[in-house]
Image 1: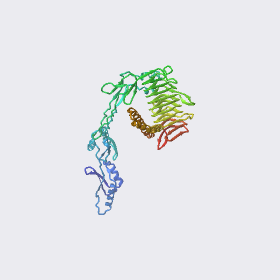
Image 2 (image 1 turned 90 degrees about the vertical axis):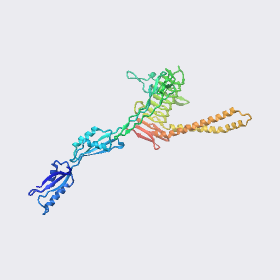
Image 3 (image 1 turned 60 degrees about the vertical axis):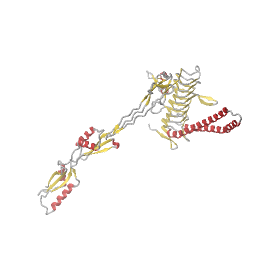
Image 4 (image 1 turned 180 degrees about the vertical axis):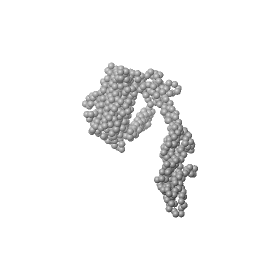
Length: 557
């Protein structure tokens, strides 16, 4: 048999196989050579492809050579010892490093010091994860030859942006409490328990300024500091009925007794008129300030306030106008009345701020800002410059109902169910800004035409004053003043409609109707010159304006 021996050389890196033919014994073959390699202590070396086959061929050829001496040893390197290796991959901005360890073939294992050296080579000094370093070295000791494993070996820390400064309100806003009435001990709610929420005494602290924080710096793995972005500065201001507590100008207090109102950067306090009910006993009310009605506004009554109006009960077939918000703890109960042979709603609400109520029926409502109704709106006409929300304000999605109602809006609409089971018409019109701009333009044009018609007369009067022997300066001054007033008014009207003209395109981009439960038949949606009529029921739906068309998409809840 041929004798097979294995030895290592070249600093124990190369495995040499030697085949020595033995007289009278079987020749070597590939299987015996492979067995000798696999059963040796060098079986983990990296076998060189074709090396054994080449060695065997050389021995075979030598045996055929008649001049070849017997028992000649033939050797060849068939495998190499390969040390384990590590590769570092650095993430963008030097925020992390991942190490990949590849197990060797009979060579040296990776030690802790090897990884430390690799980290030093890449100048990694911060965020080193020591536990991962130890674990990968230990795992590498038993890892199968040629296999790899990787782990994050270092990780930077992003900076934490500072918190913006803000106004911390220290008193409640009555309009915000209307839709969240006081819960009683028995679990019920008292819809009229609002008295302690709407009145403050002079010198009551109303709000305080919370300063922004600087944030926390971060770092990357090469030790570079990542500076935090500080929070934005907020400004607190005095408002009507409020003033700063002291020269620090960071706390505002009530300057008078009255009703507080949250503003963007302050809290105002207005004179407060508090009444039990508005009825024939009180008569109609007109008040320069805020009004708090603990009970109800009865049928046929009129209520006007230059500031907010808060009503603890219901509004019955009344007319209410507010320079601020109108907040109704319960609801609006109207009916249809006949005026000059036409049916009209018996409730009219007009607010230069928000309108808030539990429910609305048979009412005409205009709000300069938003309208929020907790339960439903029925048989009403709604004009809202801002957004319309019908549903529980604590929910992420609106769940209320709008039916048999006309809505003219300049904002977005959120509702649970739109339309009625009987198919009565419910109309949502998103052309508020189109119609408003057109009305303002017409008014400006009419005034311009009126002024043009009057100019010849005005110039004739000025000319006659100048040709008279006795010039009356006061008369000329009155004519000039009247002309100037007309021009100022015309300029203001033109500026007004031109500024609002931009709202049309902005609204078309931003408008949205979110119906979170269902749209019933009999609903019409009008946007620009297009109308979409729903003749059958639909599940939850979202409607927008896309590519000059009304886009209707189902919503998967």
